[in-house]
Amino acid sequence: MTSDLDNTPESAGDRARTQAHHRDFWPSIVGYVAVLTAVLIWGGLDGDSPSRFLWALLPVVPALWTVRAVLRHVRRIDDYQQLLLLHGLAVGFAIAMIASLTVGFLGIAGLPMQGAGWVIYSAGMLGWLVAGRLARRR
Amino acid sequence: MNNQLKVLRETHGWSQGALADRLQVSRQTVNALETGRYDPSLPLAFRIARLFAQPIEAIFQLDDEPSVPATARNPGDVR
Picture 1 (spheres, rainbow over the protein chains, first blue to last red):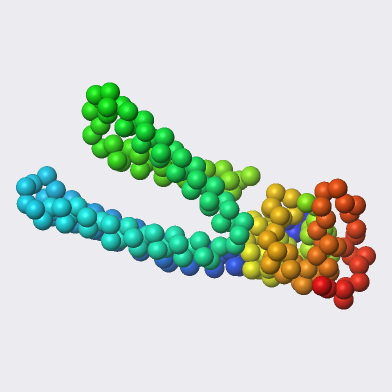
Picture 2: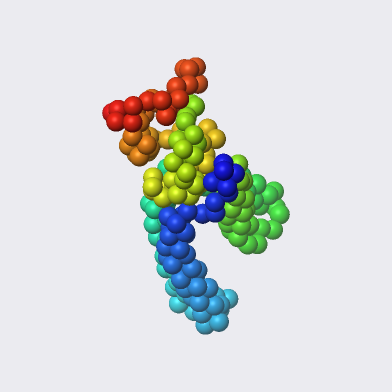
């Protein structure tokens, strides 16, 4: 009896919260990819037009939409899930900080640091994702 | 902290998911509560006590306190 009761998948509430998050999150990602594609095609970021700076900042708009989706998700989930999310974020932040220090010092030492921002971003995001997954599996 | 959540849930014949829906938390949270990996917030502890019509201290005990069978308490004794 016990094992049958314990082996339930997500609850109805879990599914509703996940679906609500997906409805918020994925349109923002699609919007981000669409804007990024437009920037890469028409932005002329490697040109010399002053408008290229405006184009370069354009992906921030859908990125803010993604932040809004995450914040709304945080408000929907319960205390324990917020704690797990916080652990993941803390690990991601720590890794991003270590990566930025490492990249900074390597730059000072004379190593060419093309795309350093993307390295830091990727390290932080990866840290967040992996730590979040590990916390949920405990 | 120890708790009688699993015993009470099984007494009612509820799955973790069913209990999670009644408490408006995730199934993962119910699992973490039952396995002692997470101590509930005070509002959640009150919701659990109300749901099972038991006083909080009949469901949750500190590690150094003797465990009292929750089902042995008076169901109407909710604080």
